[in-house]
Length: 352
Ligand code: SF4
Image: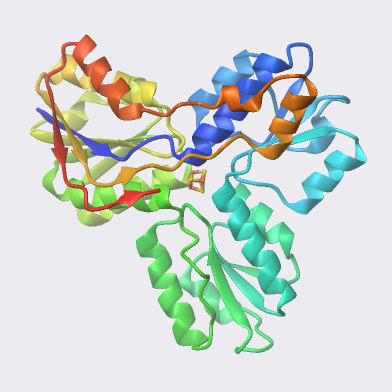
């Protein structure tokens, strides 16, 4: 069987940063309780790993013990959550992805300018809850085209839209087009709020899935961008399965399969992808082809709140930056496992 590995796949810069924040806090705060408001990233494996190291995940700030350190997840929080932490004098470390923070800032700016904001996204997703909290009186959620007739718009010349960062670019385009038809003067955001990582992982599946018999997406069911990858593949006409890890693979999925595509959502760690590859190669043999569709060169530094805490503890934050070099490390692993592999370069650009 030919195993095609989509590139880019897996951890994005925001997830690297958020996971690193919790790892760093566990290193430097040995005797303090670390709490994370909501799952740090939507991946069961990552959350279980931190839970086993003593991190407490809470869905309500009331459940954070006194004197604990509270980390805000990569999905961001509403100002109300920040207020609740301040009220309780809890030390907050903000691991919100800067690209989510950018959407918050756009919502605040639009509200100040008197716009009503249509936020395209999933109403119950943590990111949407957080963004909505920045301007609750100005924001209405649009989940589907069917929601548009029910919107309450005061002045059609003062309407703008924003999107959740992890939507399917295809689905969002359909809703945006319908919004433009309903409100011809609607204001676009300065740049797409669907982030580079979501866009690139979806682009890779669109390019690679048509030539494959089956697609495996490594990611958790509550990971919006992972679910979108399976949907995109199914829409193209290639069967797709979302799996948390290799243990969920059903061998019958590969009956008669000549070419399989493996990708991973932005919150899925690379070691889970490796286990999937190992399992499939052991069972079916074959060559791994890494197809590089886009190159990514995006990195986010540690959040200011964590750097400040480090300096107060005489730790130099600059010396603790994580180094991302997934490509080399991955090829070394393939060599060490004696897995035949080739790299195929299909890139046309780079995200930086
Ligand atoms: S998927 Fe995009 S918005 Fe979400 S954490 Fe990653 S880079 Fe940030």
